[in-house]
Length: 162
Length: 286
Image (cartoon, rainbow over all chains, first blue to last red; front, side):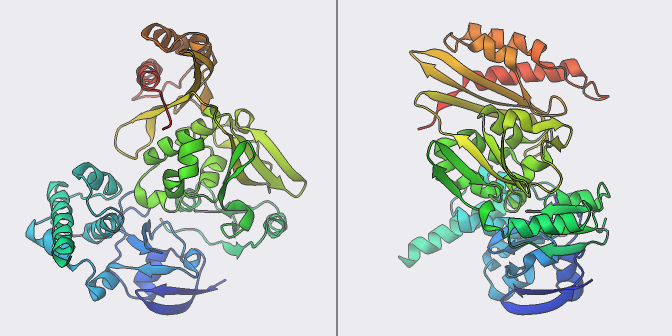
């Protein structure tokens, strides 16, 4: 039997009836058409489905949509709209920090949350933050570079603004 | 794989949770963070007809000092265990174990109560609560029970919880001055299941060990207390000699499973190496 779900997705209030078995990822993709949230392993291992829930990254494949009741969810589409991660995305582009791009949205979610919590992470801390994100095309070096450079850029901008 | 169908109900109180569980004739599972329940249902390891969301029950939340113990609500998420200053001060083995629990996103949702109730033998928190001689607060329709961690983990994924009971909190006795702690694990990959792990604490007075508590995980069907290794440390300084005696004693304490790519003898050897490292680096909380 369907359950009424009321949540905020990318700043918009959403009310939908969902089956309890529906994952948050399937809800975002199928009910809301937000297909930037990718599904890889559907086991919480690969990180392709990461979204921000109440400000922190979570696996949308492991959260039931009904568990998002009353929560705030932000997907890659939300980050695109607000431009909050535009500099990070530009650095991923500059450094060629992707090949097929399937993992990229999840990587961006992890990176964005890391930089919010820790504006000057070491490379080890970046790697640790990405430990739940798999890239099966290439390696992580360019991705770590892109995040590291973004952190420095943001610090420099903050300094300049003072 | 997608989940099988089930009914989802949210309990607002423990009494409501028990009633909903009882109504389902036992064919129900409590849901806190869901980060073990959901994947196990996706894998069809279980298919309860009802999930009872207990995440909003007030008694399960909060970390607070209560007299001589630190009470950690079962709904405390792994990320909060990692960040909480009371836990860092009074239950340091948990904050040292937390970075090893899966990955940051998992730690944002998984809960310590869910983790302990699942009782995965490769999991970090069960060994940590065992080493700290914590007590687990359990509540059911018959009332409240306090279960020593030593009596809680019975077998593979089997605990002393009676069907319907809810693990509500972890009570950690406050450490005395001079207690030292150590935690580490060996895993193939950051955040992956440990091949072997150690959680240990000991009281040091005048440079001599008393009340050593050593537990290992991923070495059998439950987290395990290494009684012979503990005895080997007792009454002596933490030295190369006493550590070597504790390492040797592990052969008495452990009988690891022999599985095809990972012979028992290798696991025992890794346990000895890791125990040596952990004991060498034991330190007090600042």
